[in-house]
Image (cartoon, rainbow, N blue to C red; front, side, top):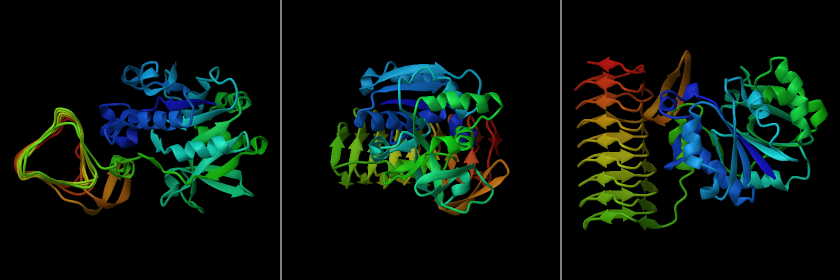
Length: 396
């Protein structure tokens, strides 16, 4: 079995995180989303795969190369213009020799989901899941286990069953797709929906773990769901007087100074400097080369590579992107809130803030739950941010 991974999209709803990288390269547990997908495929014996790339494709290709480092053989196909997921799939129409898997590169799926598709007797299958917010996805209806309709992002959903965007298809489906795509259909869900009468597509509701980063806050939940640690792995230096409980992973060259309290699951990358007297609570993910100064508390948050957190900071259920400099006494508390994406208000449970890459945060700054700060911003000392801040803004 071969696999085609669709990795050409920009991910505009993930702003500001998608400004620094392709959406598929967003780190989840200090590994790109796309790497999780490759690992799930390889663990099921699917080693020959194609990636359809576009936006910032160089970052993807330099990370994966020919795939040998990951136990895979990877070919690349370019989608030069963002013409939708159906068009992206057809960019690799010459790749499969027979039945194949299709996966969106911006969803994390556990090996169990891949196994379910491979075990199916039917040629054409859709991997499904249940969602509390089905209208964000393609809503699916079934009759006798056969998919009868797929409606992409409806205004109202009558079922909680959604398409994960992961399919098993026969090679002949690609030929059938050419007509709808040439007529202007762009989304894979819409095109496959128009072909359902001839596909006899079985729906499989997965028992594995699947999740999608649609909005920036989703990355926090994805990170907590896909942290899978067993015991403690310490490759760095831990000074005396450090308390570690539960599953903790510490990368090479990292120093945990005296008086720190770490309660797992917690992942700390390479080359970090933590403490003294820093508290890390579950589930926190610390990237490479991050520094956290004394008397700061990080809880359930994601701090990406190269960021610096000064002393006496409180960061709860938040995401700090790469190369962000945070001054002392910064506060990002978490609670139920609404996040804004363009004109939409998104209800969020127990959430802090998101701060985009290369932003400077002064001392005594507070950012309200649900607020998003763009990239390359500057927040002056003592400011309070209560709403979204666009890229390259300065707040006094």
